[in-house]
Image 1 (cartoon, rainbow, N blue to C red):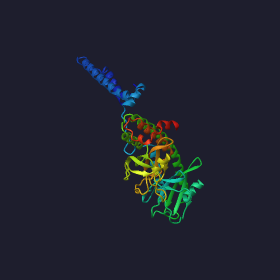
Image 2: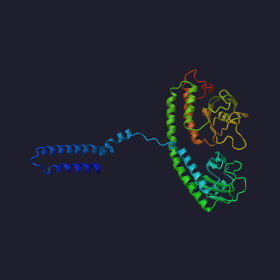
Image 3: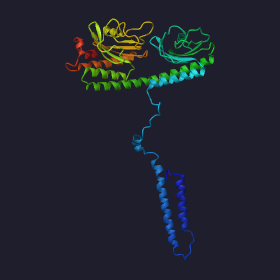
Image 4: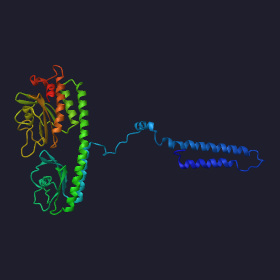
Length: 421
């Protein structure tokens, strides 16, 4: 029988042999009950054999489903949850986890005091992640035109420099100056997209062997980065489409401006990282905050501001999108609304999107984040299409429910703007 275990088969074989032997055991003719005893023994052994057969059938019947029932088997099988800390959070976070662990290994293997990874970002270098003896290094932008990092970018080869003069630090924190520097380029198609940098407090700490190791690690990071980037792009496209579809479906059931704008901000929060969402209206030569979600900073609904002083005023006046990678870059802190506003807000990234027609805007919305370099042209395109749906939703409201539309001075509809775009 197929699938029968060897132990069950052997037991049944012995029982059958015993049954056959019962008929060859010599018996006395004077003992009239011996034939009956043989018959009873035969029935008993037969019953045991049948029971053994029944028990031995289950293993082969339940080992695997038949071909026609495989889908039912998958559907009935319980879903196995991943252990804590092993859940999938997306390609972006997975790549971040990868290079953090890789940099930690590099730092330990080279006994370095600091290690960091930089990526090119619109003419500058952004420190994506780094760590030294004091802990993780805060992301920040650095110039790519001078210094040790520029040597790596220019030569497109690993660069080793021992016996550095004092004053160079990967983190910028006091007391973290390095005396030895090792940098390896992250190259893709003959273009440097970033730099792996390693530093040591010892004046002559790195060798050519370390240089070779850093080059191999940089190549590995680059290959993994592009593989993850492709998956991340597909993942983002699917997520944006799903949220956009849900946004359009839910808009039909919302009956107030505040509910529409609040739901709009909630949908954006599922796609992009931000600490403050603001909707502003243009009122003559001034702007007015209409709605805020997130960090307030005392700049709440009803606050008015001139169009010539802050970032939101710039978007309103010029009716043009604006992306700022780092509000506090350099010695000049750009105001978001007006000069003299709270400058301890800690917000770094800014993106503002106009609302209204192509010729003249009546409002804008903006996202701000505490992390620099959060917004780019891809995000701007997504926000543009979401913003069009927001305008159309407000216009569909009945009379008495359109305080935003009243500010537009009868400008052409957002639908006309969408057709023009």
